Amino acid sequence: MTKGNAIAVLILGILIILFPQVTSDNYILTIGIFVGINALVAIGLTILMGYAGQISLGQAGFYGIGAYMSAILSMNFGLPVLFSIIASIIIASLTAVIIAIPSLRLKGHYLAVATLGFGEIIHIILNEWGPGGPSGFGDIPSFNILGYHLSSTVEYFYLIWLCIIFVMIFSLNLIHSMTGKALRAIHDSEIAAVTLGINITKLKIKVFVLSAAYASLAGALYAHYVTFLSPSGFSLFYSVLVLMMVVIGGMTNIWGAIAGALIITILPEVLRGFKEFDILVYGMILTLSLLFMRKGIVPLVVETYKKWTLR
Amino acid sequence: MILDIKNISKSFGGIRALKDINFSVKKGEIHALIGPNGAGKTTLMNIISGVEKMDSGDILFKGMSIKALPPYKRALMGLARTFQNLEIFGNLTILENIIAGMYLKNQRGFLSSGLMIKGINKDIIEKSSSIIEYINLSHRKEEIAKNLPVGEQRLLEIGRALATEPELILLDEPAAGLNTRETKNLSHLIQKIRDEKGITILIVEHDMELVMGISDMITVLNFGEVIAEGEPLMIQKNPQVISAYLGED
Image 1: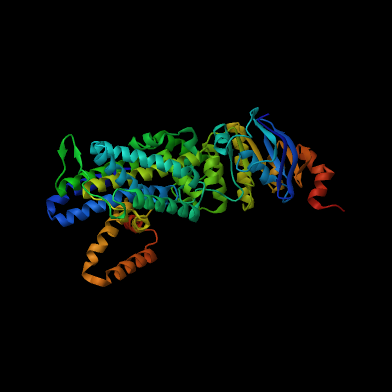
Image 2 (image 1 turned 135 degrees about the vertical axis):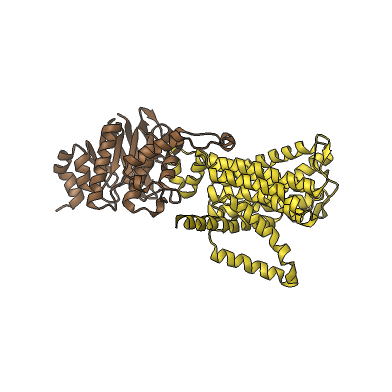
């Protein structure tokens, strides 16, 4: 991790601690929790897309596996929530390996369609075989550790953003390591990377698994927070939403995932005032930001800042 | 012998690009592979580095058959290459391109990369910087690679290959698109790599002045076949080579 990033993580940590002190409004804290859950999924996709150059439209699938597996394991098999979360991450990761081996041979649009297909398969499975079918199921145990039950919104807020701090530290370390350089090398030229001794197949699988692990962690946290699940939240629409977060935030910078998650999650809430026109304004904002901020918000801010300091 | 090419054949559809090619590269030499366009030179380079498969034959690198190995394993054994149509890592800086080349000798697992705060250590940065100095790109170190002119991108590819600490480098038309001065610098660099680092070089090149000036041995290909082999002076006088290049009277 670079010095700048270490400072940024520290600032994020302070903001997280201070935020519930500034506002005790449960509505705002709840939005903060959803920003965090979405950010977890988006961070994984940013590493996969922005760094390794592999697209995925199936993140909702891993998100769904995480949520359903953790819910079922803790509810029907009586596993402590912490273990059910870990187990669900392992299951999602193994699924990712199985999916990655054939589909990462594909590139670009073909890979997008293959992962999209995977996401839809999971969605259909949840619909047909998931507890409660399309209408879903409730009474999922809330998060607890060593007998202590998290009950308030503030506690969940801290839990989720603590996970993000850990995930960010791991991801930033990874990106600034030799492995991170190798990932970016694969992005720019696979043929050159492989002749430099980089085992591109293995690395691509690993980064795909990492993105799945993050998504399933997010899914599991979601399940134990809302304590009710139905398949509708795990459709292609969610995968596209995460893709939007990554693109709007800026996929060449991992902080873009958090910025993107913040914007995409908050936007519908902010636009409530437009009543029935909200979806129209939503669409326009997204279109305009893609037209005028191709690289995404965070890379744009970093570039502007660099220009200013060089003056 | 560091590299032995044994009876290599390759067809694309009905076209036989390589027919029963045999030659050997001696350790520590600059060995040139020349021939008119379409003679099969780049195909042969691709087959040796493993990015293309051959139909039949064998490749011995340091006496071991490498024909079944994927390209990255050949790189691990000490085989590096550059590309005719530049394959630099365009969005990385010059320094990062060289660091990516050093991955081979400094690999770390995924987990330990994520758990280790320190990242890329000073030693790697210093080694990379000295390679950048070696290829005379120090003034460009922090620039994004795709913004470099072609001549410097070619140098960068050579530097990146050097970063893997290879025993044999395949150079695929390193002088293409270079002006006279750049070509001269390139020929000095290639000789320096052989003399100072003791690295063997197999070079495919059209610039005859460069080839004749630096090669210890030359193999001539025409229509997928070896038509001549020898030292530069012998090749220049070879009637078969002259007719391949100038056409028959």
